Image 1 (cartoon, helix red, strand yellow):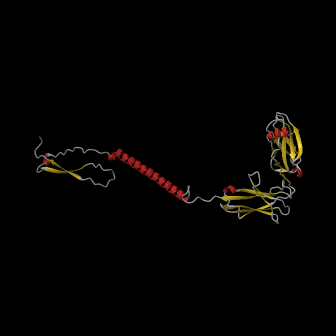
Image 2: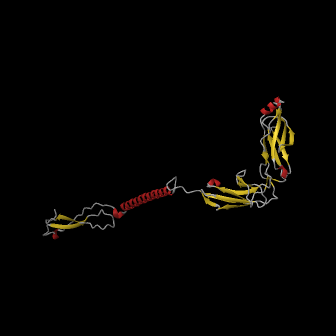
Image 3: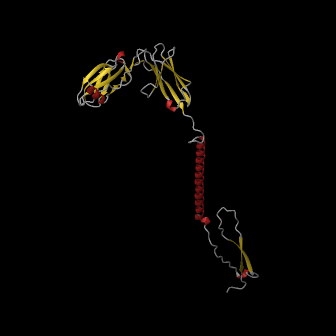
Length: 312
């Protein structure tokens, strides 16, 4: 007997799981899987320390499945499994217990309320109240996304449980519901009740810290200055290009062509040359100023010698 007990101590413990693990209602079917760490000859399922079922095994399988059909109220209890090893021979210890939570829809869902309001700032204290009228039993607070209740509490004399969330943060945002366990049964539950939604508004960052309002203002001013500089550069370049184009067009027009003054010959007949020694002539030098300029060309005075003798 001492040898058998010693061998049993050496066999690794199996593990037990439920499928589905939650949301089981009266009349549903549940499968309990006993996971074996080594080959076993026989696997046993215990319900509240009492043998519920057993199964012979072969070496090719490392999981023993037990099906519970037509779940009843009395099935809402804890379960364990145990196996008998082949090599070494012996009986393992029982697995850690798993609890089958069953929902009884014959009971009404609890009511729920949230205060002071659904939209709050960080560090606000939130109160969630749930009530189940006269049905008694522990009341549980659930949050969507969590497989297990986040809080539980015994109701007061009026059947109400008050849950307080202290100094909430954005991580507390989400949807909350309540349920209660019927009478003295820990694993027989009411359906989930209506939901309330909490949204925690993140606190604005202090000015000048990590992109606060001050830093945003500086960034906006800097961006505006950069945009203005770019616009000024573009306008300046455009103006210079237009001025250069107009200058080139004036240079190419016929009226703007610079011409050298042509030589002019003055002939005076002999009969008209008597008593004349010099003749004063005026000539206008072609202007080099652009057309339309208000600058008046200055007259050029030319002195020419006029001969009084006859032709040579």
